[in-house]
Image 1 (cartoon, rainbow, N blue to C red):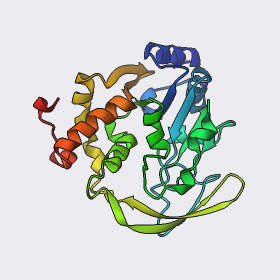
Image 2 (cartoon, rainbow, N blue to C red):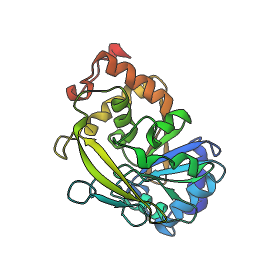
Image 3 (spheres, rainbow, N blue to C red):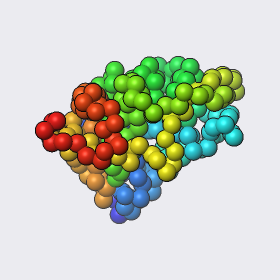
Image 4 (tube, one colour):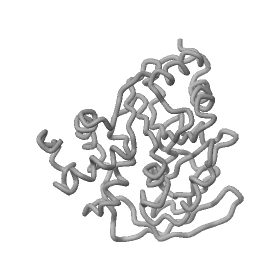
Length: 258
């Protein structure tokens, strides 16, 4: 059974910058048994990143939409696992107001980081929290999960205006802020369905990312980890998409391209 001290040693071995910006996609199950469970996992990350900015996705795309158009940032559960759900409830964590692709942030400039999300009219706008990862030269950690969890790549596709990724039609949505204030937006949703999720093909990026130095590997408890740099991943992905906008529909990338 892993202790908090052991988990913090794992973080240090991965070379995570304690003063930087880090977003974590996570699988609690992959970590294995931990003394104190999920809260201990969060304690380890929060303590290690106390002088930086720590971010978890707290997405609600699975519940918020045409049939349920009101996102209350104070109470709407995240659909991406137990660690984000517990993290958003922690004292000092601030949740963004994006109705479907929110994040929770804690630490240095957290409020500035999440600000303005109530103006987002697409899943991952360049000026929103996913674009700000690029501005901050952030790292993105895939803790026990694969690159198909890489919401950031949805953003890269959106910023490059790849066809058939974002619906032209809009859905009217309402966001409720931390003080009960209401905001309204007509939002363009992702065009992919649950049975045709483009993100399942993002795994083909792992080989070029590794070869070109955009990712490195580590371990956290039992979990295998991939640590990617946002700027390097964006640069490589954009270069590949310029060669073929339908890159992720083909299921492979010619090695000669990287």
